[in-house]
Amino acid sequence: MNKHKALILLSGGLDSLVALDYSIKHLNYDVLLALTFDYGQKSAEKEIETSAKICHYYGIRHKVITLDWLKEITKTGLVSENMIPETNFHTPESASSVWVPNRNALFLNIAGSFCDAIGYEYIIYGGNKEEGETFPDNTENFRKKVSDLFKTSTLVHPEVTAPLINYNKDDIVRIAVRDSVPLEFVWSCYNKGSKHCGKCESCNNLKKALITNQCERYLNILFENEK
Ligand SMILES: [Zn+2]
Image (cartoon, rainbow, N blue to C red; front, side, top):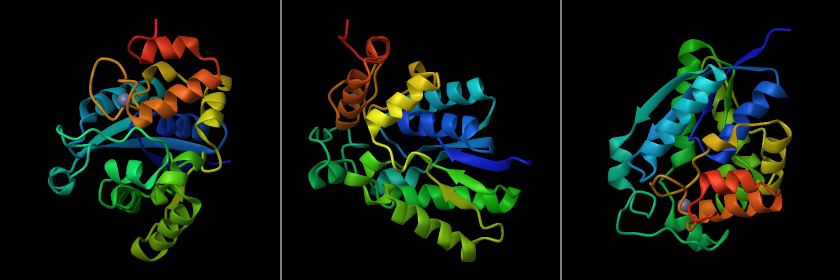
């Protein structure tokens, strides 16, 4: 059976890395291209470096897309040096403190242009149940609506797929451990640094899931002061 040609939105975080691995190992996808976005987020350099390593590991072409204008109009702790993202879990405040205007829809539409130009059938992204509780652009409803849009906005009609949409972070780490996903590559922190800060919401969520799954090794590799 022919494999489905796909591209992936890759930030190098837990969700996109496991979505990539899952698509290769459990779904019939031939992932040929990964897009990583630089919109001035504090973690941009780490995300690009991490994504490049992941692409090298899986043998995927990597393309970085820079969106300077998105940095200019984004006024939250994700890009602003003076603002600290909220550390509370899954609240409207925590979502708005890291919100980037129309981000996932924008990234998927850019991916849609690539698919339309080169004939790829699927766009994989890391949307999942836990993020969906905080971010409306991580839900099944959103995934389906963008797929529907591509039926009229493209000639190729790529489908947006989110293999982890029914899983929370604990499940995602459990799948990663089961499938020997190289979690040592992950960069999920909203901040920059040599290791994860361990303080932002994204770090807290990752840490909690690693602890639940007894991943001492990855806690030590990824986080400051875990020894
Ligand atoms: Zn962090």
